[in-house]
Structure formats: structure tokens, C-alpha cells
Image 1 (cartoon, rainbow, N blue to C red):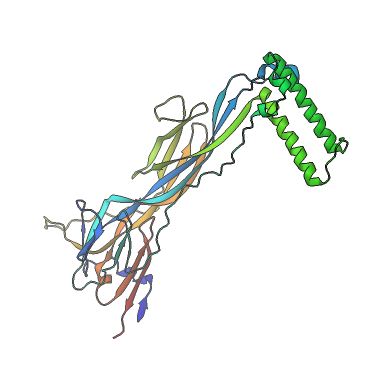
Image 2 (image 1 turned 135 degrees about the vertical axis):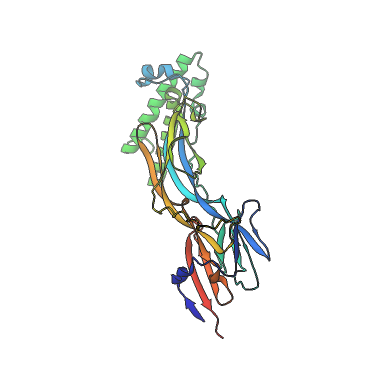
Length: 364
């Protein structure tokens, strides 16, 4: 067989051939033995934000922290704070329902193996395709912080004290004794030294745990958790300033109309990388009452867009993505799919542009 390279794209603009092609909007996409209805894709943006939530719970002895442990400015009020860690955006394809087309096979066509995505986007003709992996949002790995119950390290004397003040005083004395024991072990001056380094490490770790647990009765406990949130943004035209989400350090993500949150905006710019098609000139003295049917397959000639996310003060992130909605549509001639050739067409799954166009001519 003789193989024709992608230079056969020069045959693209023909108007005769084996595939009858119409533009439609009233049918659902799908493939039958008689033909296919398909969409071309447009680019949507998936925005992923990572938010850290920090919760502070005051200790039972917080008002005695300076008196017994010399720790100042310990808050006695519980609080929750939120922090925006990262903002990321990535493109993915969605069906452009304004670009819905149909092809009808006839006896002269070789284009009988049409492959569509689950949502009806044309992916290939006469070409095997690899299953597209579904993008998954990876959650940030969480390291659970173990909250230790400090009362398990309190002596009977502390627990039986008659007042909170006395309990705080005895707990502080216990903390100082633990720190003294840890210091003696570290210096090798304890009365009972461990036999080996591993045992010494375990003993020091246990004393540190006791110290941390009892000290939290004065300083309180702070816990942090990270969550992932995603947004999908789709537009067919440039956007100058649109509220994407609002974020509050006190409440986290809030509704877009909630003024307690700081607005984060999205800007979409058409980079004008594809020239606009010239308008067709009507033939003089001829009035067309019915649009002629064109044969072939429509594909995207994608443009580029720049997506920028910013708050009122600064830009957070900006990326450029190929986008079918900011480009043109081109017709591949039906002559490419007649019985003389076996044409292999592969489209880019994001843009709907031609990735591969090859024809094979069988040997006689």
C-alpha cells in the first residue's frame, strides 16, 4: 500500500465526496450504521484551590500560663482561621453544542469507523484511539495530628486538687520535673541510664510527649486540616472581570454574593492567534434559498486564550491554553474518505484540531 502523509490536508477544502455533511442542532450525538452525529470540543478550565483550616482550642489552665510557665499572650478564646495555600488551573474539553454536525455514509465512503467520546465529541475516524484517562483531583496528603489526652499523664495528686489554680500549679511542677529528667538523660547523668541508644531514644520521646501533653493544658491545642475545592469555568467569549469565588480568613470559601469574603476574579483573553474567516461573497444575480450541503468532516482550527486569576491587589496565576471556541471551523473534504483511500483521521481530544491525517491506497 502507498501511504500519503499529512500533506493531503491540501485536499481539505473540496466540496464533493462520499460524506454528506450538515450542520444540525436538534439531534443527540451518536454513531449508527447510516452515519454519525457529533460535537466539536471547546476548552473549559478546571480551577483547583487548596485551603488550610487552623483551629485553636484554649487550654484549661490558659490564664495561669504566664504565672507558672512564664508563657505570655496565651489566648483564652477559641478560634478558627482559613488560609488560601494554592490556586491551580488546567484545561479540559467539553462538548460545544453550537458545533453539532452530522455525516451520512453512502456506498462510496470509507469513513465508517467514527469514534466519539462519552459526551459526543469527535475523536477519530478509521483510527484506534487510547482511552482518555479521566483527570482526578489529587487531594493533599493529610498527616493526622494525634491529640493526646493530657489527663492520662496527671498524677493522683493533681487530679484530686481542690481548685483549678492548685491543679495548674501541680501540673507546672510536673512539667518542670519531666524537663529535668529529659535533660539528665540527654547528658547521661540520670540515675537509671538505658542500656542502648534505641532505648534512650524511646525514653526521650516519651518524656517529650508527656511534656507536650501537659503544656497544652496551658497553651491550648492548634490543629490544621487541608481541603481541596474545584470550580469549572466555561466561556465562549473574552471576560474582563468575573468573580470566580470569595474567600474569608474567618469563614473560608463563601458565596459569591457574601461580602465578608475577598473576591477573586477571573479574566479570559482571546489572544487572536487565528485570523477570522473572510465573509463569503454572495454571487451576483443569484439568490440561494437553501444552503448547499457540504461533504466532509468539520474540525476545529483552535485559537489560544489566556486565563488569569487575581484578587484586587495582585495576580495569583495566569496560563495560556488552546481553545476551540476562539478559533475557526474547517471542512475536511469528503474526497478524502472515498473508496480510493482509507483515510485515518485523529483529532486532538482537547482542541478538536487535526493531530493525524493519513491516507492509504490499497494495492490492486
